[in-house]
Length: 178
Figure 1 (spheres, rainbow, N blue to C red):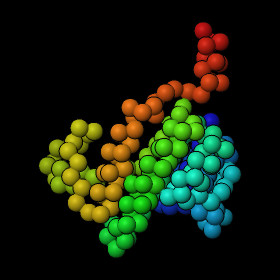
Figure 2 (cartoon, rainbow, N blue to C red):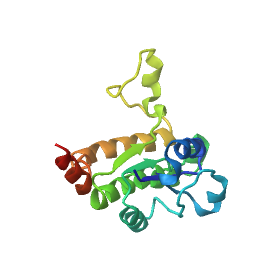
Figure 3 (cartoon, rainbow, N blue to C red):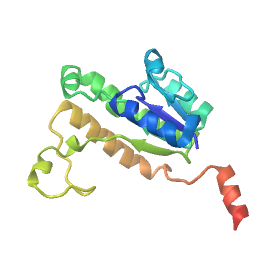
Figure 4 (cartoon, rainbow, N blue to C red):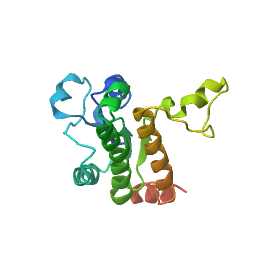
């Protein structure tokens, strides 16, 4: 298993990495912003990555050939997203789609784990009923709109081959096991 993590130095990443390190050892490949790499205990391989740079994403995804990508990169502060909505769209929506397109082009067997947000449900969450995947999206902030757009964009990509199965080596191994 080779795991690439975007946004590894953010809030979720700093909690996730020690757990992954405990369970997997250093098999996880972490791709944080380089200036924060020294803050992460249990870090595997580290390299800088800008999710808004499609060529860089394609190169890293192709070179590392991860089996899983945990995509945490985002402008996650509601305040920062409202102060700079263009950056929120660029990172939260288009950065997410850059990662997804790199998977489709370079490692279509790779699993993408996307950190969404319950805020995409906005006023729907006030209904008092449990929410599931069929709940109406009703984002009401710059942040939640960009995360909802990323969710919808990823949903549109599902039909383009993002669930094509394991890499050929794994398929061959499975075929031999039968």
